[in-house]
Amino acid sequence: MTTLYHNLQQLFRRGGGGHFTWGHFLREHIFANVWLFLWLLLLAYITGRVVAGQLADAPVTTAIILIAWAVSVAATATGNMMRRHTPATFWLSRNLYSSITNILVTLLIVLLLVGAVRGFVGWAVVRASFTTDPEAAAERLGQWEEPGANWGAVIDNFRNLMVFRFPREEDWRLWALIGWNVALLIPSAYVYSREVFRRSRLRRVLTVLWLLTPFLAFVLLRGVGEGGLLPRLNPDIAWGGLMLTLIIAVFGIVASFPLGVLLALGRRSQIRGVPAWLTWTAAGLLTGYLLVSSTLPSLRQPATLVQRVLSFWPLLILLGAFLFQRYFRGNVVSLLSTVYIETVRGVPLITILFMSIIIFPIFLPPGTEILGTWRVLAAVTLFAAAYLAENVRGGLQSIPKGQYEAADALGFSAARKYRLIILPQALRAVIPAIVGQFIGLFKDTTLVAIVALIELLGVANLISAQPDWLGVRREPYVFAALIYFIGSFSMAVYSRRLERRLGVGER
Image 1: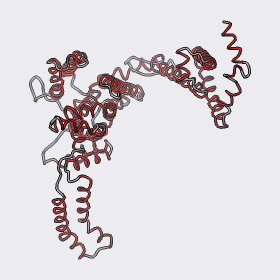
Image 2 (image 1 turned 90 degrees about the horizontal axis):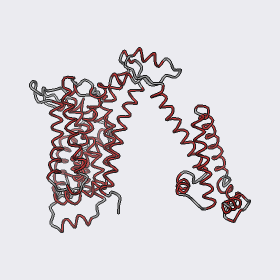
Image 3 (image 1 turned 180 degrees about the vertical axis):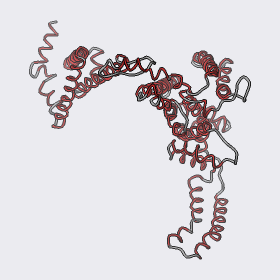
Image 4 (image 1 turned 60 degrees about the vertical axis):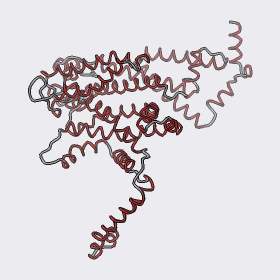
């Protein structure tokens, strides 16, 4: 105690000990320049206003936060001045209290977070109504000056939010599909995480069953005929709500992955292309033919200068031939893959969806009709594949050239080289980017509402139009946001777990 008292006495003595002086502290952290001083004044004013507001709304909670903050700041400051830290004060000094700005910002953020949580809990729980009776809900909410949430609208429409217009008598299909996935997920979580099962027959059986799951899901949700045990259902009518959201997201993820990998490999392909002499010969002949058949007749007719210049458009074929040989070396696969990727990435998903619904039927033979759901699934898949291809291409570019040369030295064919050596490393390197793309695709399913498909957010929009729940909008949106957060957070958590297991980022 005597030593501690002596150290504290030295600390608060002017110029104490040669290690800490108040004058130096003030000059360095407050009066270093006029902008820092003005910023600290503004920040202190904002923090003070927030503290005053929180003290008026929740005095006890705010007082506890202020006391804890003041004690932790004092302990950290003492540790800094005495150069004797506990693990807690050392962490606080490095992460939260490294400067006066950070000290005030920490208090400000904590107060705002606590205030936001308190306000949400008050709206969602304390002053909320959970009854599905509209009259009882109105009576319950009328007791409060500031009514809370009317969760009865969500509870009453829970089935609509989940499956929308799926026939009730066919619910057994959904339960069968859920049971199948749960039955596979439980052993898979154990088998796929153990190295001892890496080459076991059990793992191969589970893999085959997972590969069969999409086909089983299609049979259950779509049906196989007009009569019998599994009558055929119309997806445009029967599929909706969260079920449709998951179908679009899962199908887009599963189907776009192999297509994206093929596009990435196609864009980086080094196969022997069309010879330059053949390209120039074909381009020259085609250009000459079009100049004679199109340009010369146009020049004989009265026209403006601009029209005469545009009539020489066949010369662009020669430019295309030059670019084809200059940048793609005659590689048609690389050209087509690049054009597809850049074209799709150059337009938003909403444009692809409109094209699938409005423009695509124009190219179908007369009398041929494809359901809107199938067209949307194809559009989402083709759109996601273009972005996934660029992620995979980034992984392929990160593989050292020596890996390719080692595979060639071992006599591997191109298929075995990419399957066993290149692709496993490339995909492992871009797991975060791929999962981020899948999360974005999961959230982009909300756009299908513009093409008359009613997914989760579409059902949430319809609830407020029901006679019993007129004007109830926030609650369905909050519920939908929670669903999207759970799905996105689950994929992000699994991604981090997979990265740790595969050692992504380790050297």
